[in-house]
Amino acid sequence: MGQPGYPGQPPQQVDNNMTMSIVSIFLFWPLAIPAIMNASKVAPLVQQGDIAGAQAAAAESKKWSKLALIIGLIGWAVGIVCCIIWFAFIATTASTLGTAGY
View (cartoon, rainbow, N blue to C red):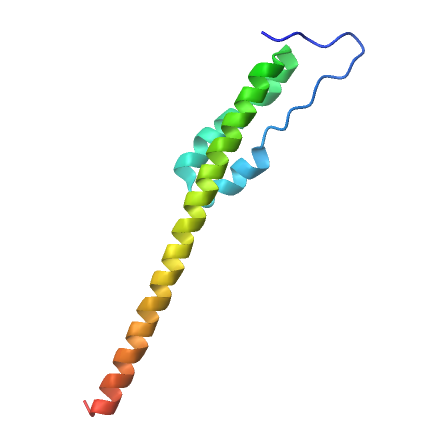
């Protein structure tokens, strides 16, 4: 376990990446859940004086959040491209049928 701070000294701050974890839940929730779980471990570890453990939990949270964001954004991009291709296909099919006299 890490060393607790000296009396009167403010505890060291460790960014828990909770905001990025919560944003990532809207893009790809299966990987955002471990990100949120690790982010929620940071504050108690800092209060216990385990700064190294808190930094490790924050790093895990950041890793899972980034993966969720990357996979989620790629998924959304693929979905949008597929919709554009689908609508283009429908438009060309409709215009072809309209000019063929059916």
